[in-house]
Length: 209
Image (cartoon, rainbow, N blue to C red):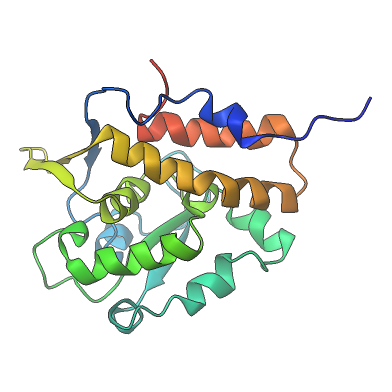
């Protein structure tokens, strides 16, 4: 019997429609998440707190302000070698250097939002590459969705970030096909492909309750 191909509908069937009414997606992330200096200070080595290898991709100020995503595409684009894809899958902490002097968060800076939105438009590959322990995936989502509901700071130096559920669901849906393509390039089976995407969907809080 011919093996059934993995279908993105298998993933989306676990998520609600965009017309459904759900509470905001709430993320607790450290202040200055995504700023290279802050991430290195919190995680000075290449291991995260679960002991897994993590790679930091630091976009420069010049790259962001000129919307130059060529290095990003060279590293993580559809023409990357399968060995490179396997090495980076689920292990990349996306950061930006050059805004350390600003007290505002990265998702509050218009050009940073535009930089991430430009990449997302051409190659929304975040679920395949981004690690989920530092908050960088929540940061990227916050930069890409049209609106940010509420931002509040708690005493224990944690930012509570609330995003509209339907907007996060749209963000996730736009990422599914590129992620399936990358999983196929490295020869993963249906169980592995769907498994990682559902883990990301759970992190983003877009699964059906």
